[in-house]
Amino acid sequence: MRPKGTVRAVAGALLALTAGCTGGGGEAGPVPASVRSATGSQEAADPAAPSPSASARADPVSVPALIAREQTGSGLRLGRVLARTSAYTRYAVTYEANGLTVSGVMNIPEGDGPFPALVLAHGYIDPAVYVTGQGMPREHDLLARSGYVVLHVDYRNHAGSDKDPDNDVGLRLGYTEDVIGAALALRSWDRAEVDAGRIGLFGRSMGGGVVYNALVVAPGLFDAAVAHAPVSGRPEENLDHFQRPDGDPVVERIEAEHGTPEENPEFWRQVSPLTHAARAADPLQIHHGTADDTCPPGWSREAAAAFEAAGADVELRAYAGEGHTFGPRWRESMDVTMDFFARHLR
Image (cartoon, rainbow, N blue to C red; front, top):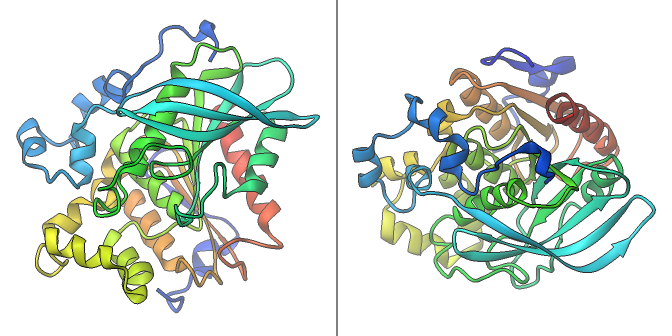
């Protein structure tokens, strides 16, 4: 593994992101059912961890509040078979995360396990039209064919997951809890297909922001994480870029409760994972196309710099001419992604 505190740009990747761009098997032994049991000793010694008094004062809508809360995940259940291929079987699944039932889909490779597992965090799709497992279909298939158990999280308020009416006003931080719960449910699963000691996290677009949050809320839970074309690590930038131009009334509700960045800068500082980047303990790889007009590539440059400055193990990859969804160089980006996961999970 590379020494922490390094950030790599391959083949001039950082130069390409120019400033002018816009914007489990039983053999593994006891496994944790909560983040505190998984990472408690590490967090207790972490100078970046909030003190008990600071946690008590934390706004309920904040990264410190997520850190202070005991994150739980359990009860992973296979449902009906959705598809069978020569390489894997696709199942509907549910699990419990912090008291909510979350739905999703899981691809389990054919052959003898245990297999390393990847939790997938999809990008934004309107929950009103979202169907279970939607988003990242190319990744689902390729990763399962490459020997990974793939658990795609539907998130709360999506498909068959339980409802959380406060999630949007809560800056969708609940999605972070759902992803952490998925990893904990995998770690405590009593089936031989999953190696509970080898679990990674992979998110794209909005899911990339979920990746950032998960790394600082639950350091050490994942063995490695990848973000493709991620949103900004600063929630106020995402509101300004995606929701405010569309007149989303949620923006007004958020600012009525918490104030604008000018009125309450500390609130907005504490909802950013970049503020807490020193907590990140897991290797992170970020991919971004230089022609992405949905999520400005400068956002990834800023996030990589913040994690690097905090001492994290982060690598930034840029793809000249690629847009938000990746086209001609998608397979190249996935080969790099799988090589990264192989180094840390195989």
